Length: 502
Image (cartoon, rainbow, N blue to C red; front, side, top):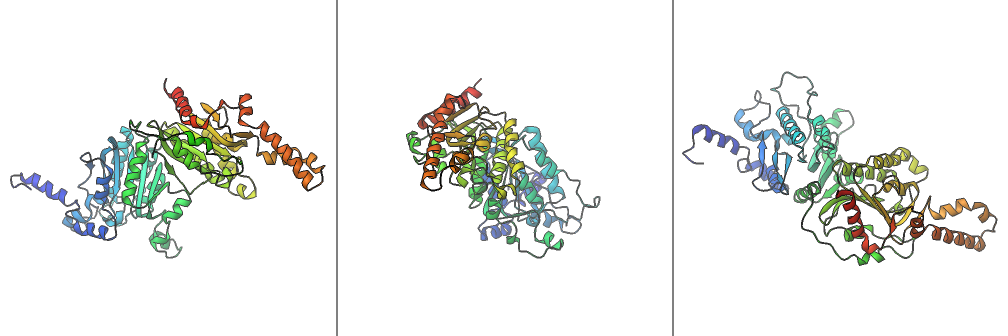
C-alpha cells in the first residue's frame, strides 16, 4: 500500500483487505486441507477476469454487542456471502457465493439484506443468477437485532422464487447445504452438486431439536441420493467442474455460439436395430445430431425413460427430450412425466425451442404405476404441452404409441411445428402386441392353444405392423413426413428456421 494515500483511503484498503483470502489465511488453509476452495477462489473461477462488481463487501455479522468489532471484520467477512454482478461467458450475470468459512455459511441479518439487494437487482435488470449455496441455514446468534422475534418477515426466499421465469437461476453446491440454504438451492431452475454434497431441508440440530433423533450431517441428503430422486440436475466431481458446468449451463440462455462443428450423419441410418424388439443407446443419436460436445444432460438417473438436456444446432441453443428405450422400453412413467414437464416449462420460460426424439410404447401402466399418482403426474404433460409457446420439432425414431407418444410430442402429433418419422417408425393407439391380443381376442380364443394360435397371432401382428408403418401414417397425414435419418439435422434446422426466422 502506498504511503502517499490519504488516511481515509488507507483505512478503506485495510478494511477491504480483511475480507480477502490473503488476510484470512487460516480459513483458507482449512479449506485447502479438505481439498476445497475458498468462496473467492470459486468466484474467480466462475466470472470473467476483471468483471466483478461486489455489493456489501464491508458487511459483518450483527454481533457487535457480543464480539470484538475488529474480529468481526475478518472472522465474519462480508457476513458470510459474496454478492455482485459480473460477466460470465462475456455476458452480464448476478452472482451469489456462500462462504462456509464464515459462521458455516449461515444466514444472518445483514446477509439477508445482501441477498435481497442482489435478487431485486437481478429482477429489475433481467440478469441470470448463479449461486453457490454451501451453508447451514438460519443463524440464531445475531444478537444486535432486538426489534424482531422470529425474523420470518424477511423477503429473500420470496424474492428469489419470484425470479422464476424472469431470469435463469442456477444453484451449485459443494459440502453441507441445510435449511434456508437448501430452500434456495431447491428453488433454482437448475441445480448442480458435487459428490461431496449433503443437501437437506433441516440439518442435524434442527432434526434433533424436533425430537427425531441424532444424525451425522453426512447422513442427511447425500448427493447421490438427491441425484436419484431428482433434487440434483447435474452431479459433478468437484467445485472446479461445478463452476465449469455452471458456465456451460448459463451459455444456453445467452444466445447462439458462432463456433461449432458437427460430425457425419450417415451413421444414423443404422442407429435403430433391424429387430424392432432390440434397444439401442439413444444418447449416441443425440450426440451425433447436435453440435459436437454441446449436449449437457439433466437428471440423468431420475425419470430414466425420458432424457432431458440442452444442446446446440449450428450454434443455436435448444432443449432436447428423448425416449430411452433401454429403460422400461421407453415407457413414460410418473417420474419421467414430471421430469419432462418441468423441463418443457423451463424451455418455454426462456424461449428455447425443443427437439423431441420419440420411441415409446406409451405411458407406463399397471397398479404399481397408479400408486405413484400416474393420473395426475402424466396428465401434467398435456397441460404443459398446451402452454408451449416455443417451437417443438418431433422426430419419431421408432415407436409412437398412444397417449405417451402424444405427450412427448407436445400433446398431439399436430402440436409440433414439424412431426417426422424415420423409416423405422411404427404407430398405433397402443402397443401393437397388446392391440392384437385385445382387438382379436375372439379370433385367437377360437384357435387351439399352441403353435396354431401363435401362428395366427404372428400373422395378425405382422398385419398391424405393416398398417402402422411410418409411411402409412404419413399417407394418412398423421405425420408431416418420413425422412432419411441422415437428413434429420438438416430437417430440424429447417423446421426451426421456419418457426423462428420471421
